[in-house]
Image 1 (tube, helix red, strand yellow):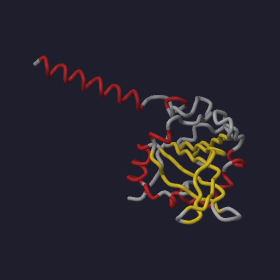
Image 2 (tube, helix red, strand yellow; image 1 turned 135 degrees about the horizontal axis):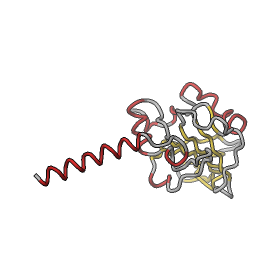
Image 3 (cartoon, one colour; image 1 turned 180 degrees about the vertical axis):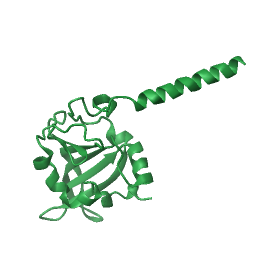
Length: 186
């Protein structure tokens, strides 16, 4: 009988915890650990080793080899949700590194590899339009830009001028180039 009471108390505590989590405020830390209460976006730590690698884009150079390499990562739970629903869930975070390349002639031919980071972009899905007065938020996303050598400082001032132009071709897929990320396919 005592064991049943402990089980019931544990179940009740779990129900209360879930209810409180659902009722949590929808700004800042409760929304995402990478967004503060004013909508400032920070660069997630450890994304290269703990997040899912979605894919890479090679930007052609004027000469042989690639000029840039774009690598994109997302949280494992965001990828799982996208694969299940075909949509990015509220709070999903994507990180895109843009790296300079190093090109060399190898035994297999001309090859380009990732070099130094030039910039990092961070996008945070905002399905609730939380930060209407922040110029880095709109079209369902928060947009952040971090430039080398100071990758700790977000430098974008307005997503419309600093970010949106490159994403116009991906407008129909919620501003994300999902066709370049094979891991998102079922």
